[in-house]
Length: 170
Ligand code: HEC
Image 1: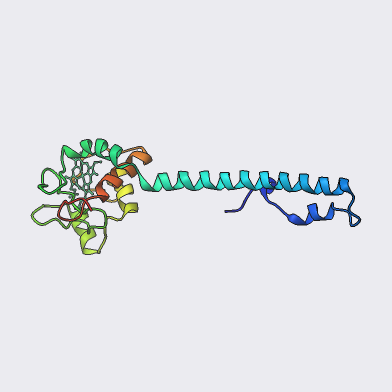
Image 2 (image 1 turned 135 degrees about the vertical axis):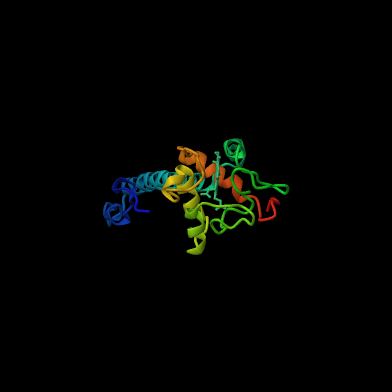
């Protein structure tokens, strides 16, 4: 990550300010410069850390919130050890699963075609599908308007990711 101009530290200019014949005063200035530099470094480090923390949050999602949001999906889908196909297929192990691959469920032509093409529900595809199912399956059967909030989608995906293909929590 490139730091903004004001936060970038170049030791050269401050070195130049130190006179070759060091007086007491020059040493004091030198010390003050170093202290200022340390403050700047500290601020820069905090800025970088905050940046990483917010990125990590966006990518990770919140499992507990995802469980709440999954209630919307639960009208049509089940997940867990006793999951059965309902209006939609069961969703065990769906993160990374091939499209249209649950035995005994009758998929739309869109999802079956995806299966033939070897497509998988990676997180990017799930994010896109859950935003609006028509993005990836224009003639698909999931009659669901989608989850508009990116954070809420990340939370639902974090919740789904916990379950292996048998519905046990990993
Ligand atoms: C109104 C019922 C309904 C709701 C609500 C619903 N779905 Fe679906 N879902 C379906 C149907 C039906 C399919 C099969 C789509 C097809 O064959 O085109 C499906 C398919 C899927 C698939 C593809 C599975 C596979 O095996 O390829 C995923 C993933 C999925 N839904 C996740 C969700 C999630 C997560 C939610 C909640 C945010 C949700 N769905 C809400 C009905 C629904």
